[in-house]
Amino acid sequence: MTTALRVGNADRRARLARRHHLAADARAEDVGTAAHALVGLHSTDPASVYLSAWARVDGITHADIDRALYDDRTVVKHMAMRRTVWAVATDLLMVVQAAASDDIATAQRRGLAREIVKAGISRDGERWVSQAETATVEALAEAGPTSGRDLSRRVPALQAKLTYGSGDKAQTVGVATRMMTILSASGQATRARAGGAWNDRQPRWVLMRDWSQALDADRRPSATEARGTLARHWLGAFGPATHDDLKWWTGWTVTQTKAALRDIGAVEVTLADDRQGLLLAADLEPEDPVAPWVALLPALDPTTMGWKGRDWYLGAHRALLFDRYGNAGPTVWSDGRVIGGWAQHRDARVVVRLLEDVGSDVAAQVDTEASRLTQWLGGVRVLPSFPTPLQRELAG
Picture 1 (tube, one colour):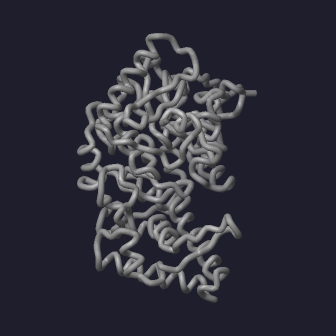
Picture 2 (cartoon, rainbow, N blue to C red; picture 1 turned 90 degrees about the vertical axis):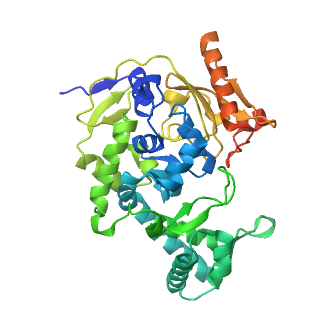
């Protein structure tokens, strides 16, 4: 009987530090390198891409990140895993599309078609959605980069309304948002440069074919092949991890997750809490020790959101640093563990709160990072879309 290799938390934290470009000796060269390592950087909050890159690339400027997103386009904003917006490294965009985004687009089309019928807008929901989708693509082709509001004026179907809930809790939502989710997940449209500042939440939409050639239908892998590639890449960055971690992160079914792990020959290991983990067969050697480090990561950072099982790096801090839906707020890290949270005060200063005694040296390093981030933000105040208890308290 073979005993599975045991991988302790110290090794997991050292892997995280280097492979997520947070350790001093493993900084990323640019935004594209950082995004590639993690598959992508979360972009539900537009500012998160900037802050995640700042935490991983020495000396990076806002202009550098703008250039990567909107000029060189080494990363492209895309609806992908867990129906989340990511800034995906372009060399992985086709894999992400086939492994995750296609299924999301299919599910979103079906869901919208049902709601169109339920709302009495059309008796044939599938046909209505197909026609609205075609009309929106045609409008984008004619107009170029366009706001959602302008698209709604150009495409009458997008002015339809759906009502959720009833009574005082009823909420009416325009179809435009749902349609842009479909176009984004299907790879037909993407978010271009917004009309305002770098943290502007209102994107302008553009056809993907006019923005990037990274999605080439002639070279697109099968869904099975793509899931294996994505699982291999993810496990190389986030392993050791559990089956449930990968299933949650990708949004796959149990069957899809098991098949992908089987296809890549993932090896079973034992984690510090005696759970079964998985590693790539060529990645079983322990990571070299990492020099002490601290980092301030933004809300929804891909590291904080990288695993479903978070106790080994989050400890007892979940209630203060996550909202009730599981969205991470801004976090303070030291040597692969979350030790506190941060926010911006009303005067735009970055303020931190440490949630455990980490010693004066680490506390001083955290203060230095907070001052450095305050300077980098230059008076711009960034508020997360999903506030957490500690972030609310610190923001004042």
